Image (cartoon, rainbow, N blue to C red):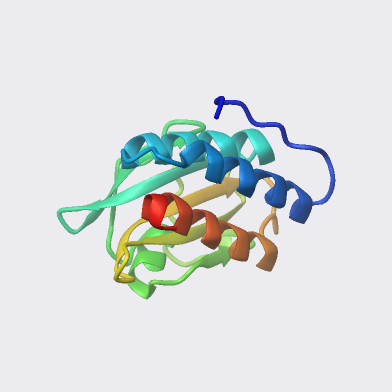
Length: 162
């Protein structure tokens, strides 16, 4: 497949539907996780124009910055710290409507107002990293985002097995 996305307008669900199929085709056959994460971050940023889209991967009991799109970011996040570390510790997606109201939020960018973090799991269900997305708008993320981004996280984490 050519490395081009064509996302039609429409509501959020329609944009996710368009993106999902194209992303699956784009990632098909690519075994390198870094390459898969990089193009997934770019595709999400291009489709939704969020402030920051990227991945943190577990390395030596910390989340370490991986491929991303957006302003510079925190390099390392401890287990249980901030939204990313909490999503890892709980092994669940966290939707944060207002980051200022989240106890212990790590402000990598003062422009971030809301956030969603989705665990990346290996084929055994163990967390191997997180997909982190920040928006400049309050209440940006909802159940549609959680469901769709969980499916995208599974696709990118599992390779062709997804």
